[in-house]
Image 1 (cartoon, rainbow, N blue to C red):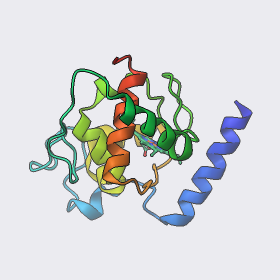
Image 2 (cartoon, rainbow, N blue to C red):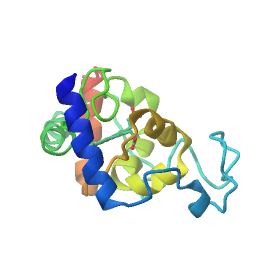
Image 3 (tube, rainbow, N blue to C red):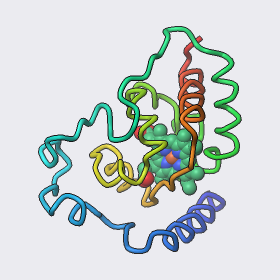
Image 4 (cartoon, rainbow, N blue to C red):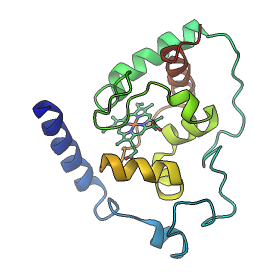
Length: 160
Ligand code: HEC
């Protein structure tokens, strides 16, 4: 617990330095102040299932792509494991267990490649931000990295 706290403090310190002021609710600046509630009334053009970003339709086979999941695991251990556990326990960010049933593939891949914009627009992402108190930094994933990590999340959620 102590360790987690320390990591949390370090991480939030780093993040606070990177984006001054944007740690608080940035809705006002981005959405002309209308988007106060976290319903989907605030921004009519925003699709909360897909999120915002380059991915509109991700092809996902019912069967696991083992090669992609294996590459995804490598990306996870380098870039995500510091903040995300594979269980349902929160570290800095939410645990990944069940994440593929909480969100669509498009949402997850848009969130992981377009994190800042999603955090400023997406009601679910903002609700997590309120719980975690840390803004997830953009991890500079390639499109393929994002797809691979998604496959790894599916594996973690029991897809075979
Ligand atoms: C510095 C810590 C940190 C790192 C590193 C990090 N995240 Fe996050 N992540 C968060 C936090 C915190 C949240 C919750 C939203 C927020 O507060 O920004 C989150 C939320 C998420 C969510 C939504 C989870 C849910 O349960 O709905 C996904 C998906 C995600 N991250 C993917 C990734 C991926 C993929 C990587 C690695 C490439 C990664 N994250 C690296 C901190 C991090």
